[in-house]
Length: 605
Image (cartoon, rainbow, N blue to C red; front, side, top):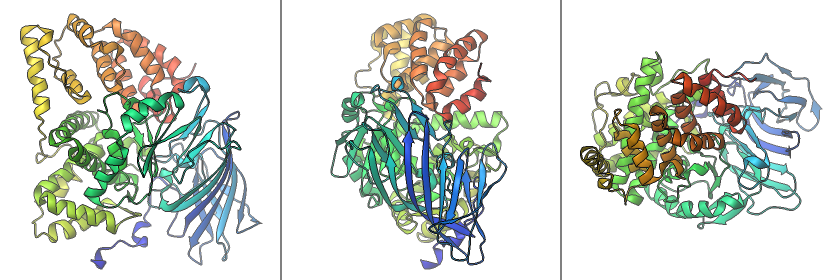
């Protein structure tokens, strides 16, 4: 219904994490001309923006952080004076550029800092291919550290780029990409669909491309490619399954870049070029639900975007729900229920921790992150509480009605942003109203604006996990390790196995398990992470060497925070943690070491 559509003006609300004033002047297209320099660890660039403004507007404001602004001009060559506000530790500096009545474009000549928070410069020794590597991580508000921009998820723009890199390197972006190295080091890019700044991405290194389907492919370092192809050969099937659920894929190509190990996240949903951690290359495809998650973002997040980071659950809760639906379609209901059961456990634990630490409001779906880094909101609340809220909506309305609602939602708000309040109005009118369903009492107050986990949360149940629980109990009752029937277990079942072990388990049990399953030398990062947590608790020193190697060579924050967090619980292990961290910190991205520095109370020597 036309009256329900959200206009551009509705979206031009205040964003607590951007200095920009898009209601006065807003960017619409970026032309980026850049030179990537591994020697100085800097990017020298010119960013030219097409802008839209009200006639009376006298300036445009961009977000920057630690950028060296050298020159600014309007239109073709109208050089202007600019000024930067005082720096804010989280937000950086506002760049004020004066506008004239006829201003149609602005251009900024600048240079990044060698310590730019979004840029990870890796030496040859830190990669799989023994060649230098650069990758960006713009989410949530780090794009401003490598491009002066209006860094708000409510502001979308198209872009094109010309990027110069050293010979022998391939450059790829969240755009139309080359598939082989150009001997000149010159690359051109276009992104025709409008995106917010947090989806700007660049990677440069010794990369190869492998086609996996008519719309899908893999980029990886040569040494990693074989494992990547084995794990990700079903990309085209994932894409086609997603399209059957919620409509046409609107980004043309879906490629995955397998990054070096220092990447701080599991994945990053950059349009056309998902970034993925090599920790998903487990050998048995059991960790590829992460790819389903990033693919789902092509609808929830990239296509329809949270208007601010206070509405982060609109990106992630929807994406977890969609991810599990993809996995259900491809691998069956019980497989999806295993994933949902893991979500239930993680949500329960993190919700309890947040409340115990006095962060009750951070367990609301609708967040209040003003004055704080939006990364604070990247918890299981947005992901898993958001998922269970949507699962509850499906149970209330029925899957057929809920699927129809989501298909309409993704189609109607494609390439736009939406906030929580707008979504709830749309939900009431287009799911409950259209299907003549009475909105359950306190549904929104309990789930969206309420603390913790509502009593109405759907309870997942997995037959495969039940079988694991029975197997663990037989082992504990009989003491016979051979009663553990693990032949057909996936990674998720092994993780559930670890979670079922009682606190009273003894040191010798760990030795028996290690002899049987060789956990200490596993190549599966998820299993290693859980095994190391158990080893720390029981002071199982046989695993400590492998743990140090893992921490030095893995940058994924999901694994680092729990392991270091467990180590610092005792003075003896805290010394171990600090010794490892001094060696490992240089391998971590800012997103990881920024949190770990605080956790470990670390200051550089």
